[in-house]
Length: 76
Image (cartoon, rainbow, N blue to C red; front, side, top):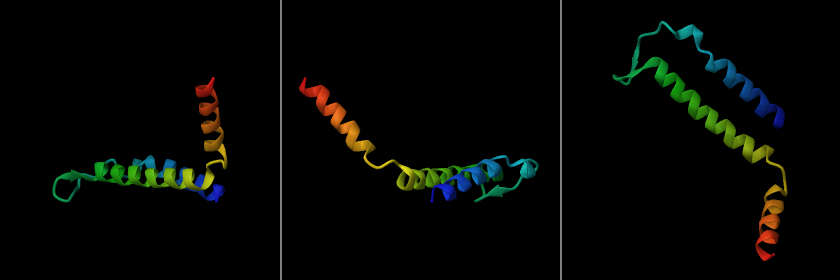
């Protein structure tokens, strides 16, 4: 799954360089410029990829070690 996350990140990097639509002057929903709508969708996709990365790639036990470190400092 980690390789799939990396592929999605690379895909987002390529799609973020939207040089092919710099000249588009269309309006989406009657008020939103096309480029701004495109970047809004890319931002939502980036958030979803980040959520997947945290869910599937976060190291096991990392939160437990951090809680133990904080608890140990508080008792001293």
